[in-house]
Amino acid sequence: MSEQPCPCGSGKPLAACCGLYLSGQAYPNTAEALMRSRFAAFASGNLAYLRKTWDPDTCPELDSDDLQTQWTRLEVIKSKQGLKRSIVEFKAWYLENDVEHEMHEISLFKPHKKRWVYVGPLTGWP
Image (cartoon, rainbow, N blue to C red; front, side, top):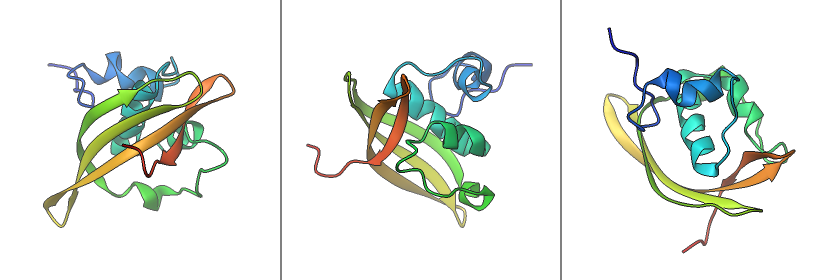
């Protein structure tokens, strides 16, 4: 029996990839790794992890209704890692009424208490 693949699209087993972050065994050390783990958290309904990895200044009130979307796959287009801010551009696909839809976002990440956190979508970035 093979291990479940990680929803983030890395090709690695979940336990050896984002599962380490979702379980609290480790914390992502890059914005891209955090982005991937947040996708895995959305896909698996891990609300606590999403709150923990969201900038407290921009984190909305979240509840289980926010996790009803069935996310199907992730593609990281590009990632620019910096010291004070990082940017990750990605496409994520989800199912709605048995039809797959695409979400495209350029996300801003920044350090908070020595850990990367998701700030929100970035507009106007080339």
